[in-house]
Length: 89
Image 1 (spheres, rainbow, N blue to C red):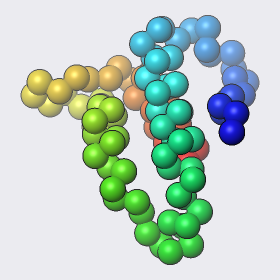
Image 2: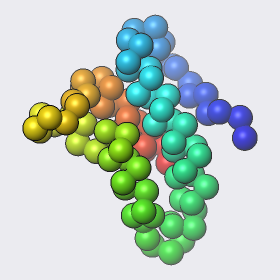
Image 3: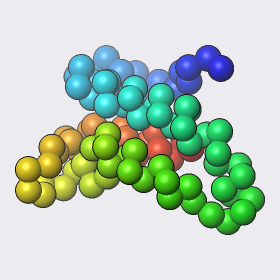
Image 4: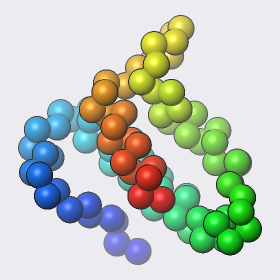
C-alpha cells in the first residue's frame, strides 16, 4: 500500500518545523500500518484494539501535551498533528 499523502489545503506543511513533521509522519505511518488494518473489524465488534495503547505510549503521544514529570512534552502544533493523524483512523 502506498504511504498516505494528506491534502494540504491550507499550505501549512511549509510552516512546520522538522520535529513537527517527524512526529506527524511517525504517527501517520503507525496509523496506516498498525491501526487501519484493524479498525473495520473493531468497529463492527464495537471494540477497541487495546493492545495498541502501549505502542502509542512508547511513541510518546499519549498525553504528549501535558507537562508531567520527566516525560517529553509535545508542542501544541505537534500534538494537534498527532490528533489529526489518529482521527484519520
